[in-house]
Each structure stands twice: as structure tokens, then as C-alpha cells.
Image (cartoon, helix red, strand yellow):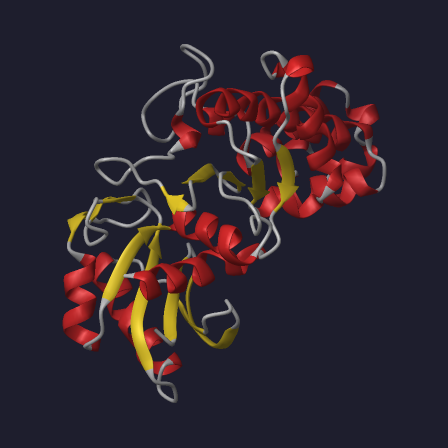
Length: 313
């Protein structure tokens, strides 16, 4: 199969891209993300039609944030779009006249990294995305493992603290409440409130108050040596690495790939994640260690992965 289109549905924009067999994006088109479920479907179809206008397209892959059924056709539940048992594949296919595959967006990103990014050369890879929340994907034996009902690898909602912080999913103590961009901001605000004298750079980047701290401020302050910003990254990394150690007990991969916006800080976050992983890995001194690698495709991973999954049918 030749050219396919990958679609990445984000909170503010929907991106569609024409992707070749080597994972190269040939052309992209973006539209704002509408506020309604029907509007999102319309926007997907518009983006696909526009980006594919001058190409011979054979299939379309859509990365959707939510639970996608085992047939990769229906979005069972989406947290940020009012999709409940939404037959997205059928709706889009009827409009564009091409075969469509729907996949969870974190699965699509994991597949993109495995095929064309940091996972090349590995047969067994676990991916986590440290963004606003925490997502993931499982590739074992060169295959994307989705589970019997299609909703495996929801790592962010593994409960790591019994009766812990309330999560948006309705449960308590979920991993993403302790290892995510949202958690990073919480750590920084708490520390800046408690010891403002250690957060002078960080506070100076916002409005001067702990409540005014944003994720971008923490990154800038950490690079400038702000103690509170650095400590906040270390706290996130401590939780992230401990979670990877648990996943190693489950899956025993040769590599973990860490993506998402938080991972853009590179070794500032990856080095302490590796240290925490080794600290909590059972039998660490007696067993081989999985590599902990930075994702390579950045924000393109989901689009490229969705396009490649569409190619495979």
C-alpha cells in the first residue's frame, strides 16, 4: 500500500497528514477542533479531503483520545469529546469513500515511535506519554497489543496510591495524578508556596504568585537552575520511574520510550526517571535492564502511527 493519511485529534486542533511508507509526512492540513462531537467528525472529513486533494490516498487512520473497540471502529468513550459508542469509522468512511482505521491516540503514537522513531530495532517496547495526563502503548513481538476489548495500555489509570488523589476518571490514586504535566505544575505550586525564597526564578516568570505558575515556567526556571523547578521535575521523575519498574515486571520489554510534552525537557527529566527506574526495579542487580529512551518523533508520532496502522489494515 502506498500513501495513507493520519489524523491526530488534539484539544485545540485536528491535524491530517499524508504519510508515505517510510513514515515521511508529505503534506499537512490543520483545522480548529470544534466543540461538538458532530463538528469533530465534520472537521476530520474536511481535513482529510483537503490534505489528500493532490495525492492518491489508499486509507485513513484516525488517532482518538479514548477507548476504541477491538474492531478499531467505534469510540466507546472519549473524555474530552462527547463520544459514547460513536461509530466513527462508519461515519467517516461514508463521507470520504476510503477505508478508515480508528485507534487510540497513545497507541498510534507508540506505533509511530516503534516503526519510525526511538523503537526501531526493538521487538518489545513499552511507550508512555507524559503530557497533561499519562498514556501508553504496548508492542510485544512486533505487534501492537490492544487487549481483548481494545482498551489495553491505559497506564495512567493504574492506581498507585490507594485512596490517593481524585482523578478525572473518577478513581483515586491514578498514576497520572503523580506523573504527568498536570502533576508537575501541582508540585511546583506546592513547593513555591512552602519555600518562595527557593523559587525566585520560577515565580518571576509568572505573575509573582504560586498560583500563576504554568508548565512552561517550570521548564524555563529549571534550565536556569531554580531549585524548586528542579525538585518538581525530580518528584515527577520519581513517580514515573517507579511506574516503569512495575511495567517491567509485567512486560519485560527491551526498551521504554518516554514521549509527551514533559519529555521535551530531555535529560532534565529522563536522567532522574532512569535512576528511579533502577531504584525500584525488582532484582535490579541481577537482571538485564530495559533502556529508557526519549521519543524521537515529538508531536508527529500519533499522526505518523495512525497512518501506518491504516496501511496495515
